[in-house]
Amino acid sequence: MTVRTENAPYGLRVIEGGQPASAGPANCLQLPPPPRMGPAELAAELAELYVLALVRDLPFSAMRDPHCKIWIDGMTHFTLHELLCELRSLSWFDDQALPVPGPVETVFCSRTVCGEADHRRGLRRNGDGQLTLRTLFRGVVAHGGEETRLSAFHNTDRDGCGDPDPCDPPEAEAPMSQWLDWVERCSGAALALPGRGEEIGAGLATPRALVTRVQQSHPCRIYYNAVLRLLARGAEFDPGLSETAAPVPISAQRILALMADISERAFSIAMRMQARADRLSRPGVTAARLTALLSHEDLMTGGEGGLRATAEELSGKAPNLLHWIDRLNRSQGRVPTRGQMLLLPALQSSVPQHRADYAAQAVIAGALSTLIKALFDTRRHARLRMVGAAGGGVDIGVEADRLAADVALARAVAGGYYQAENHQDLRLGEALACQVLRQRFETLGRSASLGFTDFDGRSVMVAVHPRGPGKSHATFHREGRLAPWPMEKLRTGAHLAVV
Image (tube, rainbow, N blue to C red):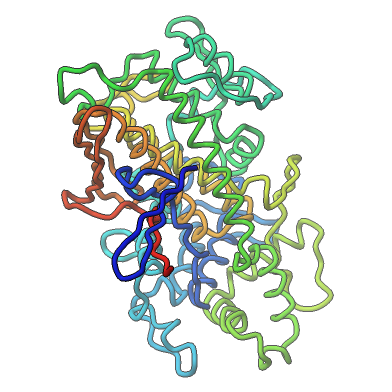
């Protein structure tokens, strides 16, 4: 580090260090605080986790039929429509809900909710403002399509190494053979050339199967497999990378190097988020407190604050849902001493679960999905045929969005994370990918642009403008307008001190 002092008028001295003043301020991510959920949203979040627990073994193909019947035991059953009605009755999803008198009035009146919470709620509803089966299982990503299905990238997710061995990646310009060896050793992903007996992963028929696949695989494996297959099939890069006669500033090795860099940064960011003092309690802990609160009626008049309001909302407006969860817990051998057993039903998976084990999955998924959408041509007419895909080919942008939503869905089905956390983590990964792309492309010294659709369904463009040999300036555009870089925090390099 270099330090330069300079005398200035009026007895002041400017001290600059770290980098030359001509380099400009360094950018970094401003990590957001955990989602702030009022009692109404918390009740809806818990109810959604209960619903996902009830349909863990229901095939995805059956989730389109509202009359599909779900049996818990020989006496208890319900339909998807009845399950959906329980959610719709909650204040958070009911636009006709009236304010509740008292200190929580502004929380229960859905019309007074604004900001990030209202945006999260909007993703759960269709264009008419209604919660439907499609929007419920769509997750926290605003991808299009009328189908309730998983990403086509799952069909070509190949595991070439049963026991990954983490190690440092090769140089960005290393031969592709070294990169393929590293990718397989570190994540299990492996390249299968077209027409040479590709191994297609087994289909994921139910949410339980999705959870098992996500928990048992390296968080980057499916993304490495997807990119390797896109490259092997000659998928075109974003046309904005070829705006001039200069060679396209991207290659297979550089894409893999970007993925390795972004995944490491995403893991570090996720761990920093987990270490925050204001982090949310786990859903399982909240469900246990809810069980204790509702089983002791005398505590309902006590000072549990927001949790008491959440309990009143669930017990008063979704009593059938709580009854079904109680029956499911009892069928698993959980019998309460008194009242209902409202714990999150055990997944009964052979994979040990810990809050830190899967903390980085959604951030990594958000970052790598964004990278795929930004680097490859995701215009509507650009479709690619892949093994296992339906007749018309694969829309890379849509499938990347679905893949990120699938990872978030798996974390919710397992009961480890609220959907509000998944919403935030995916967008944190998206912001990280934009930052890394900015840093890399500002060294081009030439014009370029990258366009994609973000997780909220808005068009995004990163434009690079040359400012001299080896230097460029990148700008961020959303919906055609210049916008601030997402979650960016500027750190200036100069400080003014009094002598």
